[in-house]
Image 1 (cartoon, rainbow, N blue to C red):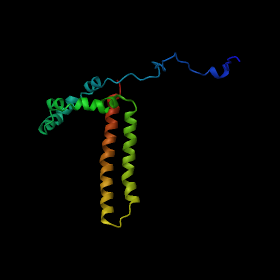
Image 2 (cartoon, helix red, strand yellow):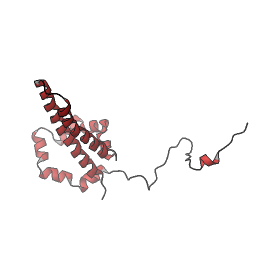
Image 3 (tube, one colour):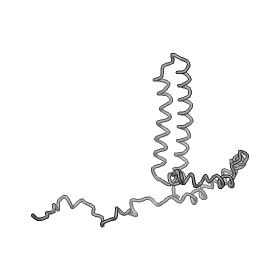
Image 4 (cartoon, helix red, strand yellow):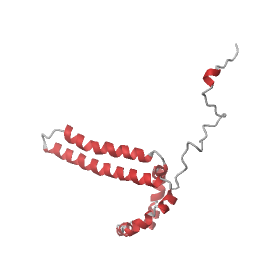
Length: 151
């Protein structure tokens, strides 16, 4: 028995060297997002300072030294928050989440009957959470998209 090759099926095949996966092509891959560079380009810290966000955070006990002591940046890195900010799929996922949440509120009002007071309370709670969560996810999607946009 010999080993045969079907050259018709191999014409559109991609072969990788043993132990290697596909290499990214400079034409098809997007350049990596440089998060701190984009924060600097967008002047986000200056805008936060002018808006009074930094002094408000300090009044609530959240200063840079507190962030360092609590290890919030390393915790954010462990949870994947920082890498999610550079992932090209994050804005789309957040936008999808926001749309789902914003549809959830009216759906709950339509589907949940209003026979008992606890059902009305459930409707109000779901609507409140879906509006707040959907709006936050939409804003986060927009923010991450702006961070990832290159000039």
